[in-house]
Length: 90
Image (tube, rainbow, N blue to C red; front, side):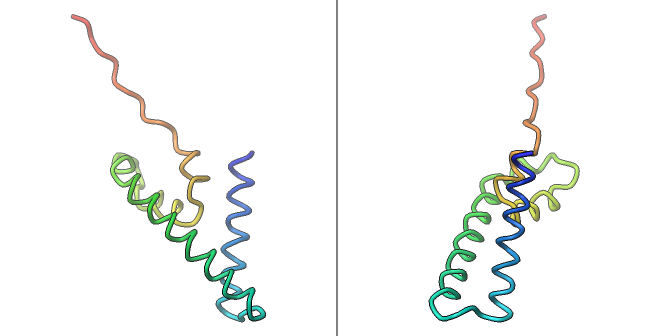
C-alpha cells in the first residue's frame, strides 16, 4: 500500500510539473517547480543507469525503465529481488 501511495503522489507531482510547463505559475513558483522537476528527472535517470544491468533479465525491461523514469524508487521496490541459484554439493 505504501508503494502505491508513493506512485500516486509521484504521478501528482509530475502532473503539477506538466501543468506548470503548459501554463506557468506565478514568478518565483514556476522556477522552483521547474527546478524540482528537473532534479527529480535527473535522479530517476541515474536510477535507470544504475539498474540497467539488473533489469536486463526481466520480461519487459524497457517498460520497467519507463516506470522507473516516472516513479523512481517506488517502482524499484515493487520489482522482486533476483533469486540466487542453489549450489549443489556433489
